[in-house]
Amino acid sequence: MTGFILALDQGTTSSRAILFDRAGAVAGIAQREFKQHYPQPGWVEHDPLEIWNTQSEVMRQVCAAAKIPASDIAAIGITNQRETTVVWDRKSGEPLCNAIVWQDRRTAGFIDKLKKKGLAGFFQRKTGLVLDAYFSGSKLAWILDNVKGARKRAEKGELAFGTIDSWLVYQLTGGRAHLTDVSNASRTLLFNIHDMEWDAEILRRLNIPASLLPEVKSSSEIYAETDPQLLGAALPIAGIAGDQQAATFGQACFDSGQAKNTYGTGCFLVMNTGRKAITSRNQLLTTVGWRQGSQLAYALEGSVFIGGAVVQWLRDGLGIIKSSGEVEALARSVPDSGGVYLVPAFAGLGAPHWDQYARGTIVGLTRGSTAAHIARAALDSIVFQVADIVQAMGKDSRIKLQELRVDGGASNNDLLMQMQADILGVPVVRPKVTETTALGAAYLAGLATGFWPDRDTIAQQWQIDRRFEPQMNKSRREELLGDWRKAIERAKNWAER
Image 1 (tube, helix red, strand yellow):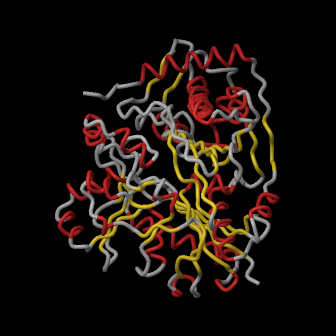
Image 2 (spheres, one colour; image 1 turned 135 degrees about the vertical axis):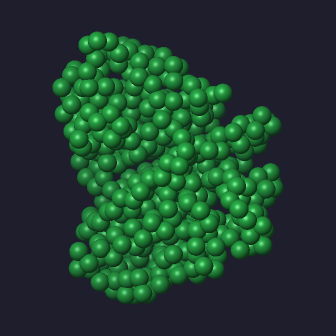
Image 3 (spheres, one colour; image 1 turned 45 degrees about the vertical axis):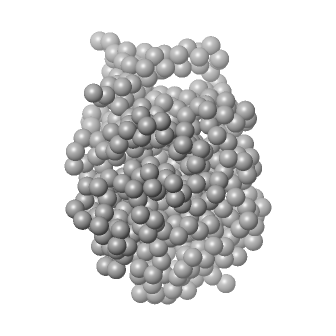
C-alpha cells in the first residue's frame, strides 16, 4: 500500500511541495521563492520556466529529505495561484513571454471599454465574475494583441494557453497533456459556469481562438501520468483545484453555508453554496468550487488583493520590521491604531468595491502616530477588508455566518485572528493543519485514487487548533467599521485619469 500523497502548491511568491500521510498530517515540506517582475507600474510578471524549475526542484527535494521513494506515493495533487496567464509553444514548450500575474492591472483600460459597451451583466450571467483585469481572459487577449506574432501563431494552432495548473501538467507529463479543472476554468472569464464549457460567444467578443484552450476536467480524477524521469516512476496526477477552492475543500467545508478565509498574499473568503450558483448583487464572485465525481459545488467568493502582502510592505517598503514575524509584537505594543487607518489598495481594491484605480492610503496620522500604530493599522486593514466581504456575502446568500474557518500563513498570528473575531462578531476557528490549500489538492487526488475512501473520512480528520471568540462590543465594532469605510472612500479612484 502506498502511504503518501504529494501535493504541489504553486503560489504567487513561492513553489512548495508537501507530502501528506493517510491521517492528513504533513510528512515533509519543501519551499522555494521565485522572482517577482515589475516591468512597469501596475504590471506584475513571473517567469514560467522559473516557476516550473522551482516546483520540480522542491518536488524532488521533499521526497529526498523525507526518504520517500516514488513507489510510496499514490498520486499527485496540484493547487495553484489562479488567473495567472501563461502562453507557450505547443511543440517546444517554450513560453511566449512572461506569465501575467493575477495582480497585474495592465488590462484595466481594456476592461473599461467592455464596461462602456454595457457588457458587465453579460459576463456576470455567463461566468459569475465581475469585469476586472484580475481574470485571465483580458490578460490572454493582451498577449495575443501585444506580443509579436502571437495572434497569427494562435490562429494556426501553434500555441497553448493555460493557468498555472495547466502549465505544470504540461511540464509534468513531458508535453503530453493540456488540461485544466473546472475550478481554474471558472476564473478565466471565458468559461460558462452553468453550461460547464468554454463559451463560444465570449471567445468571439474577446477575439480568442478556441484552439488555445485546455480541455476542462473535473477536480478529482486521474488525468495523466508524470514523466517517469522526474521522480523515478510514473505517478498519476489525480487532483487539481485553484488555491482557494482547494483550501475550502481542505477545510472540509463540504456543506452549503460553510466558509473559510485564507490569509496569504491576498485574502480569499469562500462560502460553499452547494449545487446552486448564487448570482451576487453585492459585487462578489460566483465561482465553481469543485467537481468530484457527479457532485458539483458552487461557491461565493470575495477577494482581497492585499492581505498578508501589507506586512511584507511594512518589511520591504517601509522597513519598520526586519521580518514578517515581528509585526505581531510591534502591533501589540499599542492598544489600538490610535485613529490611523491604512487602506492597502496597492493593486486596486477587490471585493466588494472592485475599484481598479484605488491606491494605497494612510489617513488619521497625527504627531503622536508611531511605527507601532501603522503596524496595528496594517493588521486592522486585513480584518476590515474581510468584514466587508462577510457583510456582502450575508446579503447575497441570506445565510448568517456561524463561524469562520481560517488558514494561510497569517492565520498563525494570534492577534490578527482575535481582531478578526472581534470585528466579525463570530468565532474564528484555526485548524491544527493550516496547510489546507495543499491538503485540499491532496484530498482531491486521494479520493480519485482510493487513497481515502470518502469525504466523511476526510471531515473526521479536520481538527481544531484554537477557537477565537469575539470580545468586542457591538458599538465599538460599528464605530471602527464606520471610520474604515470613510478611509476606503478616500482611497477610491485615485489613479483614474
